[in-house]
Length: 137
Image (cartoon, helix red, strand yellow):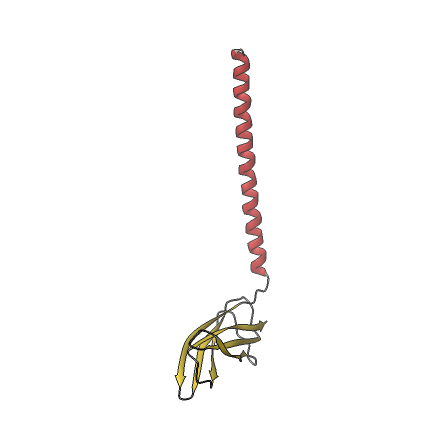
């Protein structure tokens, strides 16, 4: 291969490399722009959300009581929220579940929280838990 052909081949490879590099760089910028638009669109849509935080599980005379709070983590009022109380025995088996109506009459605004309590009269309860059951805005 002559020096002239070698030089032309090297230049062609370098030009191709930089062309592909800049083309890929340009595509990354488009993707970031699309992602940013998607996040903006999401921020404008109503997004209900909540978090249940259990704050206590205690034995009071003949009953076990689970307590906690519900936090509205969405961007819209929650008009109805129920929490499921879960009571377990010493072998971690579920022995009772209950439904606690937490929000019904007064909506829970974004960022606000409200407390709840649930009870079991079973004598063999050793553990408690609470989790979101149903909610809507």
